[in-house]
Image 1 (cartoon, rainbow, N blue to C red):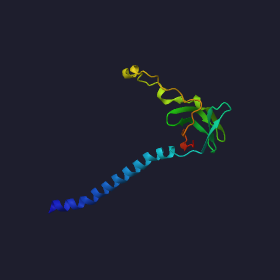
Image 2: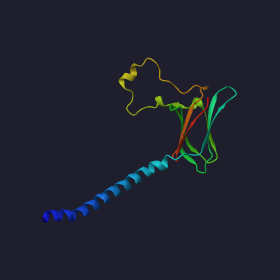
Image 3: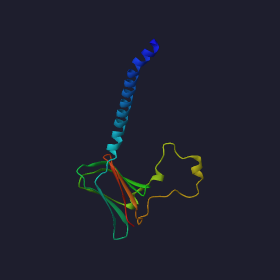
Image 4: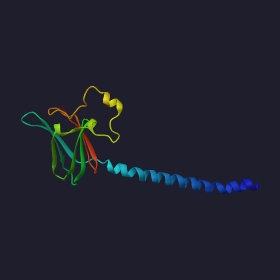
Length: 151
């Protein structure tokens, strides 16, 4: 009977320790996720496609928010990208579509693997000067936004 009485006295302590552990776990998970949720906020951007007199396509990304953007990467169709150091609030960044680099041509730290040397076709280059993008993503240190553009 003495052992049973001891176990009954320890149950509230065990329950309190379990509840404290569960609360601490939830707080640490929420704290860990809060950074990612803040960094993925939408930015106030306007994305436009333009055409020059020669028929070449260019892309304009306008920052109409109140904060400047740092480390701006514009990604076209999930494959081509162009970087800008900074886009000030109220200003814009313009680039011909032919200046976007192909993500497949980024040098890797590991170099070229032996099976890639066997390829008979050259890797694709940047988009053509008249290629119209369909999806544009703007990623900055302050957040990101994605726009689907009409054809």
